[in-house]
Each structure stands twice: as C-alpha cells, then as structure tokens.
Image (tube, rainbow, N blue to C red; front, side, top):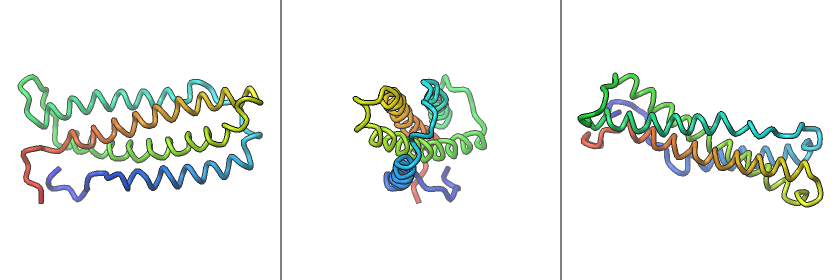
Length: 153
C-alpha cells in the first residue's frame, strides 16, 4: 500500500459517521418508531457474517503480505481491494453501530412497558455488537494489507 494515496482509518474517521447517523436515526425514530414493523432477529446476521469473513480474510492477507512460509500468494490488486473493503467496512460498521445505539436509547424508556420495544431493543443491542465487530474486522483487514517492512513516507 506504499504507493496508494489512501491513509489509514483513524478514530475520528469512525466517530463522525457514528455520531451523525446515530443522531439522525434517533430523531427519525422519535417521530416514526410506532409506524415500523418489529425487527427480526436475522437483521444482524449479514453484518456478523461479513465481520467473520473479514477476520478470516485479514489473517490470509497478513500472511501473504508478510510472506509467511505457509501463506498462499495473493495478487497485489486483491490485497489493495481487501484494504479498501476493510476501510469501507469499518466506516459502515461505525454508522450501523450509531444507528443501533440510537434505537436502543430511543427504546429504553418503553422496554418495561411495551413488549415490542423490549424485543426491538434486544435485536438492536445484538446489531450494535456485530457492528462493533465489523468495525474491528474492517480495521484489522485494512491494516493487514500494510507491509510492516515498507518505510513510511
């Protein structure tokens, strides 16, 4: 990644979508939550599956970049795409985490009173957890494609 113009994702890059999307979703939910359908427990599954796939890919990319003896070689373009995927996933995961937290915060006052609110808060909590995993997997995948022996410029 030494010739690329892309910089590593920083914490501030993740805070912005987390806060902006979280506040936006919270405001929208204040006005429209009662019109929404109940959340399905399958909502977090695709994000969780992507996180797992990126953790696995990060391990493979890291081994290829570091030229581990047991690593299968990877084309530089594939590694660059993995780095870009990791960067994008960490940003998307941050936004989803913000939205899920906004939903939980919106539902907390109603959890003990409305059964559907308790259900949705549980799903949103799981969604928040897998979104945080996606952020971690994305960051790991992004950093896996960086050659530790390359000089920083």
